[in-house]
Amino acid sequence: MKPIAFIIAGFLFAFLILTGSSCEKNTDCKATITVVDSTGIPVNNAAVYLYATIKTSSGGTVTADVKANATTDSGGEVKFTFKLPAIYDIRATFITTTAPTKTLVGTGIIKLEEGKGSNKTVTLK
Image (tube, rainbow, N blue to C red; front, side):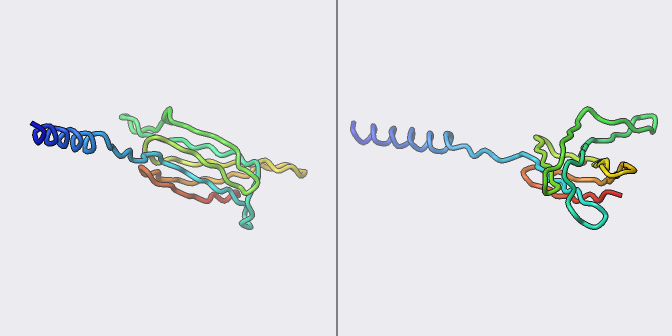
């Protein structure tokens, strides 16, 4: 009777090992946007807006509900994390503090892939 108990225990152990050890895949999509001025210097406190533009059946475009915005740090960077892959339009703006004040704008596109990070540099003009 003991050999049968060992065989059953072995099958139970193998079953628990095979079914209990699931590997969770990292599906986060990370975006790092760096905003620089026309000379390549990082811009602190630039407003960065990510949004998705989709085409309508009538041929027009609308902005999807998926959006994100943040302000760059002292290194000109801002980071976003999304749960699903997507392609986002980027709009970065900065209002100069010297007279006369000007609004500088930069645009770009970033593609986010599952489990990967993407980097994009946007130049203000």
